[in-house]
Image (tube, rainbow, N blue to C red):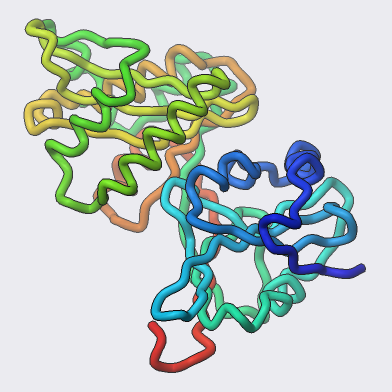
Length: 295
């Protein structure tokens, strides 16, 4: 078996996406069109005519090329067809030396004991139960907050919100953690996903049609991914995100699909996700610099 490094213009994207379609660990983040939107540049490692693939998003700083993990793509790493065996360490070892630093997240099906990997946690909720059973798995505080959010008689759910409305709400209430480049990327990503009927945006507005909170979800056959959200100060007080997530769970109960919260290493956010009764999914992040001064 041979692992080859290909530059972006050398990648056969039809074969690449075919590998993702057949991948045991398929995630939407790995498709070529998704990478084209969220990455400034990306090359790849390919095993045996696209039996396994690994994207290499990269940037250049002061003339130094390095691999990074792009926003809005929680897990990358190696994606591989059913029945394929490979050594993750061989893929990492095949990263060309022109990249003097790399830091990126692998996916939930990638692990290697001999590599120094940092553990990350995601949360998944299997929606294959009746809604009442799913509701019973919320923790006590979550059930109380859901009930309180539903009792807010001056607010209502809004479906199919325009992308700009969501992004403007985020800009107005975020703590400058995203740049204009990130907002443009998210707009392009959501536009593409909605055109492909693979995403939807739900919001909560008050009686004056003022948006209090909203969230964008990717909807694939096996996962509904909680991709992006925003709340105003009043929206947080009215617990609108509890309302939105509970609505998504209600609408998709008894389906063979997972609600993917996309996890967080921030305890307050992780606690919020856990409160809906989801199970832990572990994935790993790898970080290495080939030159000591390049952090």
